[in-house]
Amino acid sequence: MKPCKVDGCGRVLWAAGYCSKHYNRLRTTGTLEDGPRARLPLSVRLWKNIQKRGPDDCWLWVGATRTTGYGSINLGGRSKGSALAHRVVWEQLHGPIPKNRDHHGKVVMHTCDQRLCCNPRHLRLGSQAENVKDMDKKGRRVSAPPKGSSHWNAKLSAKQIVEIRSMSGSNAEIAKKFGVTRQNISIVRKGKGWRQID
Image (spheres, rainbow, N blue to C red):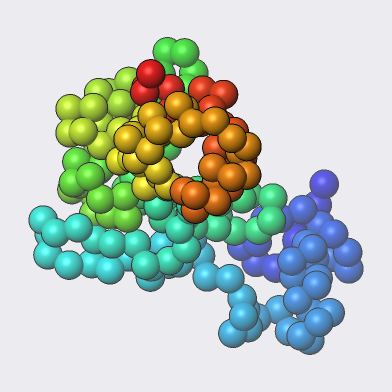
C-alpha cells in the first residue's frame, strides 16, 4: 500500500493521495496544516496535565480521572482508548512496561500512596502481588470494606439489628419505626445482611 503524500506522515493512503486524517482535514478546512482544534501529541498532553512541584513532592495529575481515583489520558483516536496517566509517564521515561513470566503486565506502584501522583521519583515497577502486599502493609486495601455500623452506608446500629430480629410484626411496620425501607428489614430478618451479628 502506498503512503500518504504529506512529508513525514507515513500513514496508509486513503483518497486523493492522502491518508484519512489529511484527506479529511483538507476537505473540511481547506488546508493540511494543524488547526487550533488539532490534537496535541501524547507527550505534550500528558505533561500539560501534571502539576510539577519540588523534585520530592507529589506531582498531581489535574486531567481526567477514572472512578478508581487514578488519572486517565486518551492515547489519541477512538481505537487506541485511554491509559492510566502514571503508567504513561513511566513508559515515556523508561519504555514499555515489561511482562511477567505469566505474560501479565507489571504494575506501576506509587511509593507515595497518592493515586494522582505522576512524579517519576515516586513510581516503581512491581508485580500485582507486590502491590497487594504493599497495600496490606500500609492498611490501604479497599476490597474488604468495613462491616456493620462502621460501613459508610449503614442505616442501623448493631443494637438495632438485634432488636429487629427479635421483633414480630410486618416488615413495613418495623421499617417505619426505624426509618428505613421494607427491603432493609427483610434483608436483616433473613440474615442476608449484618451476618456478623447473631
